[in-house]
Length: 200
Image (cartoon, rainbow, N blue to C red; front, side, top):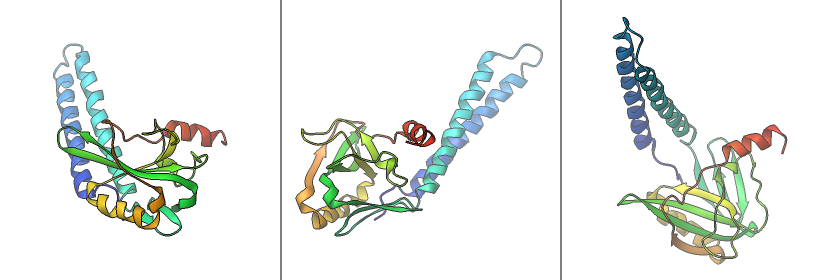
């Protein structure tokens, strides 16, 4: 099942951010050019830098959306499969001690969901396919490991995802738990890059 947010939502947002950035750059450049007879104000240069930052964020969002367009999660008797669109990896059920769905609120109405997979043993933080799912956070209850896998997913697939876990691994199912706002983490990109550059 596809778990990532639809491009029809992400792409317009990214394009809007890019448009705001470009308009801001144009405005800042106009200020600088308009001050040709005097030293241009520092605020003009600061504005250009800030607006270029907006453009960069929008471009990065478009790239991330493109890369994740075919990402999906799969379940079968063997375990949980993560397909990032270019490669696929398996997390066997017998390597896990528990699986849960966590959610938290962003603002008043938006719910953010994630699938949490807790391993029995060490996690390969630099697995070529799975490293983007690895998180190091406080567990919701004693006995669960800090380092585990976390997969954010769209609310629309919540029921199907939970049904898949309960069908194939009912003994691992820990239920659905509300977490504090901001519970969804990010991959340790810097650490991953440093470890892979140094060979481990």
